[in-house]
Image 1 (cartoon, rainbow, N blue to C red):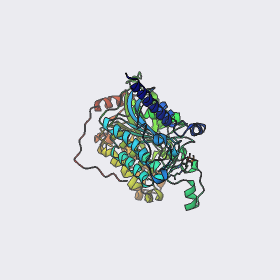
Image 2 (image 1 turned 180 degrees about the vertical axis):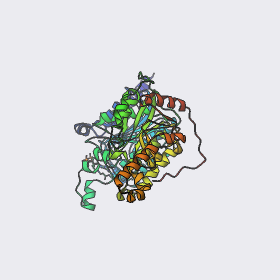
Image 3 (image 1 turned 60 degrees about the vertical axis):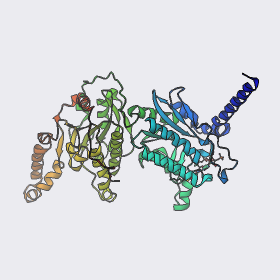
Image 4 (image 1 turned 60 degrees about the horizontal axis):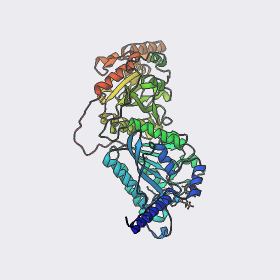
Length: 521
Ligand code: HXC
């Protein structure tokens, strides 16, 4: 090669490397150090911790910011976000990681273009998209162009919803527009103590409503895990959050066109579960730990609970049975007697739809007296929210198995996926009671006059309750009508569920043509 050609390539290579180095340094050593000293990883360290070793391929490396008046002379290496693709557990994912060291990770038009590029790629090839969010919201200097950037992201979040899994980690103070993209995705994870989500921050709130509130109180991981329900999983720190993303991905298919990955287990399919006889309290009114029931039954006792701190009367999460991923929806008799209220209905309905989008069969464990009575619940719209559960179950076409572990009454019997709501299989334990309501309430209503007229009303009431229990508080009336397929021994629970899932593994269910349904919101 001629000398001048060699010199040209050397110079070109040197420039390429120089430019890459600048991009890789983001906001510079000082800001990177500040980021680390705040207990956080940098944008690139996060990608490294998430992906399999050496699997990251970066895209849009040299993208630069839009030249608006206020952005003249501003340096934004990498445009405040690192984007590309790689592997998690040997499976492809697209990823973007916002860089807080560059203009606070704020979102400008070209920053958004980098993100939408990998979102489009994920949708085209059919792989999950993971967003690692650490952003101060719309880039103020870019004005409406930055709002447009958000619009392009939100639009794709919605269009690709149900196409490929979308997972968002919140790993810093995410404000304004930075919270709505995560809210549109399937799962939101937050790091405790270092991540916040809010539409308007404490200062604006103070000036508008005069409320004094800290970042943590307003939108910390704890608030969004316990109160708002925005956060699905909390991590101790960035690394913990990233590990939890891997656990979630392992239960999800690459796209709606694929099945969930199988995870072989040494836990025998026929393993007996006699411990359920000890765990499930025979007295209908006494609580017992449904979480322990779930863990006793599933592969390797391994259960990934989703939204574990929100609406604890309802348990939702992923597990495997015979190596197959399942979504478990269960009443929790240890919290408000496991009744259905507004938050529990929202939580379950969302989870059921997430499972249905991504071909995860649903196992429903029922121990419920009904919807929570009360003026507040009625006025806040328990009708509208409870309807979401009915809708979500009826709409779901994945395999659906219902097991009544103790009682199933009234509207909640239907809302917890009864036969008529589309359950493929309904099982019950021998102690299960299926009725319009509990014996006490029922006897008081239908025998009220007789009880009032009686010389010994208490004795008459007790007699009527006992008679009602004898007649209806058992699984056999429902089983006799075919609403329950089998009454099973609790020790056979695992084997039964695995056999039923195996039978249903090729289930296909077509629905009438529609544009899309109209779930009550
Ligand atoms: C451009 C921004 C920025 C923004 C912060 N920066 N926010 N640049 N646009 N929105 C810059 C700062 O100037 C600073 O630059 C660097 O990012 C770090 O910010 P600090 O304030 O020093 O960091 P910190 O003290 O950690 O506070 C972080 C923060 C705070 C809490 C996020 O920056 C903040 O409140 N920012 C504004 C948040 C906000 O209101 N966003 C909403 C935008 S409106 P230097 O050069 O000093 O490092 C919106 C509407 C979209 O998003 C709606 C769509 C539905």
